[in-house]
Image 1 (cartoon, rainbow, N blue to C red):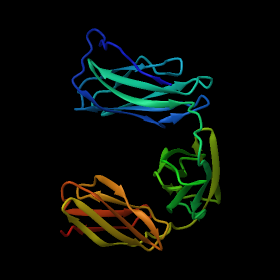
Image 2 (image 1 turned 135 degrees about the horizontal axis):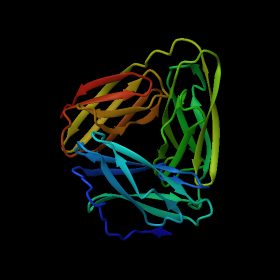
Image 3 (image 1 turned 30 degrees about the vertical axis):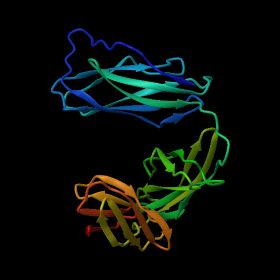
Length: 294
């Protein structure tokens, strides 16, 4: 079921809203069993006075939001909680944030039915035992190649072990990798990492030990070429479990390279303009920069 919203956005009398909403995001984008989600409103430009953002749900019986949220003066983002109904049928709810008559929307999938086909079978972390402050790579695994899947992630102790809120398994793939960050500990500490996909949940553990963090890996770019709109990047890492991502010269994320095994990574895709200079960064701390050939 898809629930949509039609509304007239009326600002409270006397409200001053100089900025506009540049983006609205909901994380995670899929919840079930009464779990809540977090909405984030991004404003531009920064307003010198508090800004009231009106909030709406296309189906409050499934996912409810407060009527409004106030961004303090000079603050570029503001968050709000989305509360969901564990007994609701599968529904895609449209969440709307608006200043004056300028709205932004984001969708939240609530209690979605588990689709047929390959299912989430495991979540793992490599290495599973490491000194606090070191990095690791997590992997979610499906029973077969997917048509694309979004898996929600959580840590039982986010202060010590950090994971992204979700990771994506690309269409045609059966696994997806995600970065894991850790903090220093004074004694051996075990933390659980949970992966959820629709009604299926899988859990693994990671053990942190006292000591110096592992050194960064070494990253090398072996090919960086842009020719007639085709961008080709090849790189290596001394850590075969690394996640290598490509960034623009100004630091903007471009894409993640495919791990070909043995510490070799590559990707080739259409790119309209020549980026000129790119940087490849590893979740294990290494990086390298190259000027593109043509």
